Amino acid sequence: MVDTLHWSGGNTSLDALACALPIVTLPGRFMRGRQSAGMLRLMGIDELVARDADDYVRIVARLVERRCVAQRIDGAHPRGAGAASSTIPRRAPRSPSFCAA
Image (tube, rainbow, N blue to C red):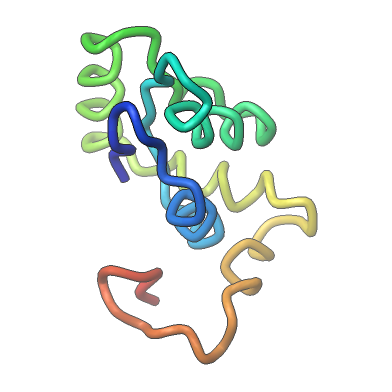
């Protein structure tokens, strides 16, 4: 997932991380643009936090080629590997726009 610039994902980022979906973010000047970066740093996945616009594009391009980062996000969940996707309520819609299985 590519985080929006200047206004970070917030709950959308939490949902994406719960689905083990990588988020690429470029922290903004204000707190509203740094939420996803804070979440990723707490999980120890700093390589998805870009330093500048060029780095942002480079990270996205790298993720398109490499998909194993999702496994690392899932493994960083406090309850262990596989727990992130199991925290999504069973009633949650199963579609490409929300954690498709």
